[in-house]
Length: 604
Image (cartoon, rainbow, N blue to C red):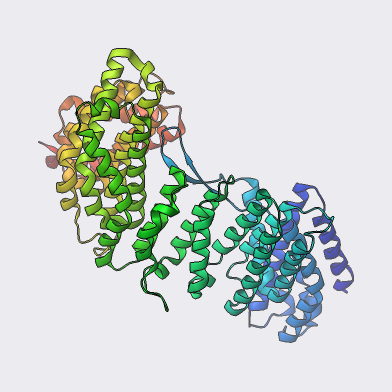
């Protein structure tokens, strides 16, 4: 009886799903997601279901016919729903939402950031559609495969005809193909993916014009990057894909290079172990081959993309044996070490410093070297300690040269110099230096990292090796500069030092407060709007000191301790929620630890 109205109702809902109204479509997708999930989960269960537990939505009452629901009932139900679910697959594939993109860009402070798009309605829709397609694939993988391959074949067949080709339809089909990764049996997935890649490569050959070829190429890269299980199981195909990505890195059509390096990074993160072992019929591991061709592969990439490339290579190295990591880092950073050594040699010539602070290209090259080191450190960790030590003292000299020039210029000409191109580039050099040290300390001294991954370096060794030459010039520069020239990254670095190297940094809390606390308070206490980055990072620093260097607070001079407490109370009144919440948390933690501890401990 239920089938007389349920099946027509579901058919009617399929037709509604084909409509153009976006809000109606979202409601339909939510229904199909729930509906397919219910069928899948019930299909998986092996226990018997009584009629009293039946769901009218799935017509259990009719199918069980007053008896225990068995395999034959489930098969009959799937057979009954099969035509409807096939149509649902068609609709969802043809209207597939765009997956969240990771964009690589340089922010206002010159920092390279990889940020996912905000959680928009489209991303929420993609997640719902992806989940529905996964359930629908589990219910009938063969039907899903047939629909997708037919759609792809149709894309190939329209080439050369009068029918207009739609890149949007190909994009949606590729997004749908990528969304069901892992939902098929491995053998089925292999057959399916080989057919998809074959058709897409044929489509590249058929298309005319760089723009059309770039659209198809980007879809190939996206699909391949979504199937790491297949790539891990087929080394020759994986190697071919990587070499093809290297070719795409020389393509100047907008967006292709970014897609290539982004896919390269994604594959290296998911298949990194495959690159550090010697594969069958190979003379050496893939990562050992890279140094000889790296200069050529990155020759046409922008600095942003070179950083992503190096990060990807870093993920390869992170999978190597602990004894090999340091050597591999040295090999793969050789190109940038040579560039750095040449810059430092040129600085020793008479009058070179004056030229250095005005040479835009050299300043960009310095920033690039520092950034690729930071990306390598973020991926590999403590194995980069020798690499960092090799450039560390020269890096701090460059930092001081940059700081002195900015201080001298602002003293002579005022804050207007902050807009000059060379001053902005010098500030980038300073920030890149601070971020490199911050990332190294954060990764290398992380207590959750294994001793092997930390190269058996403990926080005390890191502090002894890297802290003494760093703190004095950084803190002195921060205090002496005018407010507009102070880098908020200094506060970030100090917060990480307090968290990771608390035993060593506790001895320096007095100096930090003397150099940073007072001048930063003067910057932000006048109003609630100016220097927003400094505000947030200032309270992150206070939070880190409160959590990790608490006893050091009671060895501070009375005026500094009072200023510390006053700044927490002032933060609670702040109109910016993030600052107010942060200040309240620090104040709460401070009072909590103060009340729990014995009073004698805090007497100097």
